[in-house]
Length: 467
Ligand SMILES: *Cc1c(COP(=O)(O)O)cnc(C)c1O
Image (cartoon, protein in one colour):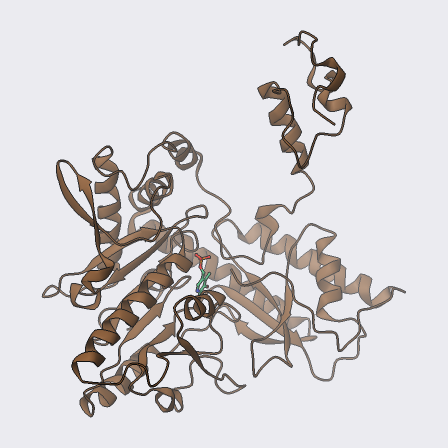
């Protein structure tokens, strides 16, 4: 049915009340374009209403992605939507703002003064990882060719823990690279330092360390990895380097653990990515990737676009996109400064630690991650649990109050363990946390009392959780 159907010819009256209009009286065409235009105020309402029964973003404890920005930031971003980030000669100030963001991040990540760092904004960490991975592959190929390695004898490989995010699987499929995963187990819930170098050979394009494993929030021990790589490199011509996937930790750790060595302070870390839309506190679609020195970003991957009558290098995959997210990131940097980011993250951390303590007190769950690193709380049912319900039942129960708390099995090799995960974000204050704990206790009480059909104890389901 078309939006106006038989009323096509009628003169529409701007005084018609929205809910007395023709389009509110009919179901919209869904998969074909309506023949006639719709009044803006009515189109707005119709679409807004279609989105009504979606989850409430602020209560979504499943995602790292930012769900709040200050009204001034939102205003600034909506007023700059038309700026095209790639059009550097039309919008040179915007290009300069991106450049400032890269420099701000480079300094947070301790670039070295004797090196020439480079970086770019991206749509998110996935694009950033793609670029980091490509640079590693190209650089490896250039090195290996010089050393006379038969490039066709084996597929190149990438070494990473089994807690990797799906973007690395994509990278390996797109670029025909073998994904070599180092299994995690109960004693190694991040990259296993005793085993990792066993996976490395002449065909290794690089090792990826993760600052914030998506599933548990743990950090790989990059200082140790750097030492292992240094040792390895001393003994071979086939050097291997590290890319750090710091999607969530990259704009968290510098404020919360400034003494932790994970970034360009480590000699063999050559590139790092982060998601501006995670702890960079910008709405989704922005990421960043930086190389410590141009030497690690092969020239084949750098292209030039025109800029003020001259040229400027670009290495992002996407061409046109709005610059508003870059401007939103810059707003946050200016607005919060180091202290602001620290204070927000500290509060986020305090909430995570509070939640972990309260959940532990219930004496039903074993805490897998207590929020002491990334503000993520993970827990599993105690082995000797007496209740019949599973974490999936609990997730369903919490959803009745609007809370989205996913339950899922841990990644490969730990996948017999199912956990529930709460990601604490900047907009989840202590008051909300107290309310949540109240709702959690009520949900457990209801489940204990309920005569409902519980999920099978053995059913391993998955809720969305990899972001
Ligand atoms: C979220 C995440 C990604 C993907 O990031 P996007 O910005 O959503 O593309 C990659 N790696 C890790 C470790 C992540 O946590």
